[in-house]
Image (cartoon, rainbow, N blue to C red):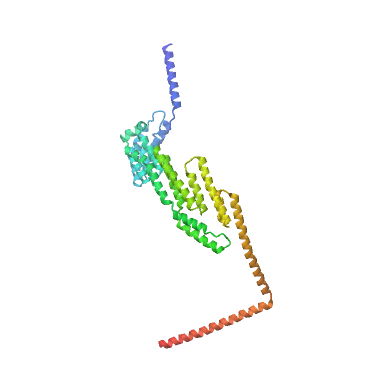
Length: 417
C-alpha cells in the first residue's frame, strides 16, 4: 500500500472515529448554546438583573461535546454573583435557596453551611433529608472533584466535613422517635370517650325535634372542643415514622422503626375495638389503623374482615334495641350496605308513622275549629266573651292609673313638695 493511500485511509478512519464519538456524545448543550447563555448573562449583569445573570452564567457552563470556550469565564462570574445572592437569601432564612445558589456557583463550603442550616430548621422533613443526603454523599465521591474541576479552580480547594453527613444520616432514627412521641400525645382517650358518649346520646326518633336539637348542640360543642381530629394526627405521625423508616440508609434502623410502628398500630386497633366500639366512627378508625400495618396481604385482609364482622354484630344489636340510625352506621362500616339501607328504611317508616299520627291529630283539631267558626251562635258567644275581656282589661288599667296617681300625690306630700 502506498504512503498516499495509507494517509488517506488513516484520515478516513480518524474522521469516522470522531464522527462516532460525536454521535455517542450525550451533551446537555451545544457550544452555540453556551455562548448565547454567557452573552445573555453579561447583558443582564450590565442591566443590574443579577439573579437572571447568575442563571445565565450557570447555563453557560453546561456540558458540551466539544470544549466549552466560555465555561471558565462563566464559572468566575457565577461564583462572584453567588457570594452576594446566596448571602442575601441566607440572611432572610431562605436556606434552601441559599444552598442552591452557592452550590451552582461553586461555593461548596458556603453551600454546606446553608444546607446544614436547612437541615436543622426542618428536622422532621424527609424531603430535606433526601436533598441533604444526596448532596453530601455526592461531595464525598471522587467524581465530584473531576466533574467540578473548573468551578473548584475558581473558588479553591474544597474538603467536605464528614460530621455533616453523619448528622444527616442520623435524621431518620431521631425523626421517627419524635414522630412516635407526637403520636402518643395525639392519641387522646378523652376524645374517644366523649365521641362514644355523644354518639350513643343521639335520639332514635328524628321527629322528636327538641331531642334532635339538643343532640345537635352536643355535637357542635364536641366539634368545637376537638377542632383537630386526634386520630388523624395520630395516623399522620405514624405515617411520618414510616417515611423515616423507608428513608433510612441503615437497615437495622428501618427494621426497628417499622417494628415499633407495627406495635403501636396494633395497640390502637385493640384499644378502639375493646373500649370504644360504641361509636361506629371508631370502628372505622380501627380499620384504617389495621390497613396501615405492614404485613402479609392475606393476613391483613383477614383482620380487617374480623373488624367488619364485629361492626356487623354491633349493628344487629343496635337494630334489636330499635337503635336504627346507629345500626345503619355500624352496617355501613361493616360493608353491609343492604342491611344499612334496610335499617334506614325502617327508621324512616317509623318516623313517618309517628308524624302521621301527629298530622291526623292536627287535622282533627283544625276540623273542630272550622266547625266552631261555622256556627253563628258560637261565633257570637266568642265575640261577646272577647268584648267582656276587653272591657275588664280597660277597667283594670283605669284602676291602676288612679292608684298610681294617688301614690304619687301621697309621696309628694311626704316629701313636702
